[in-house]
Image (cartoon, rainbow, N blue to C red; front, side, top):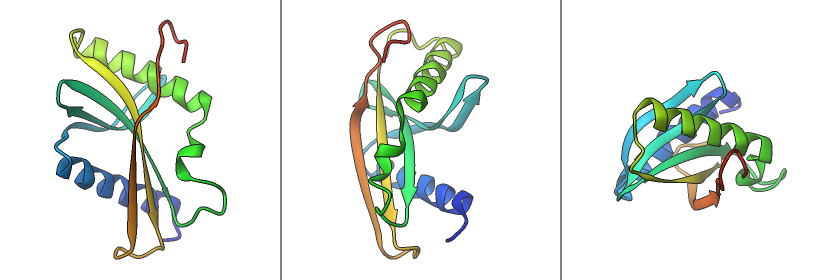
Length: 127
């Protein structure tokens, strides 16, 4: 799995399976609009979770979640606000999660770490 796109798609598939096993209902994958993109949108209880998936074959450059920069967080928040407005989901709470998928390049050795509330939105694009 040397190709980053293949690794990313594999990581998203593994993340979806993991989330479904945790009781999430996946409602959208790879939602995008002009301001950004969200890898997975799921419902966890009464909360809509906007989930960024980061897949890596090692931690030599740090943990995968460290790649979710403040700029990326801002794009995710704006995309989430667009999604919630588009689908009129005004009565739902939302949160922003990150899933780290670590693999050695094979499909047998996979470690998945879910970070709930990885970052917050505190109003008018202040995050």
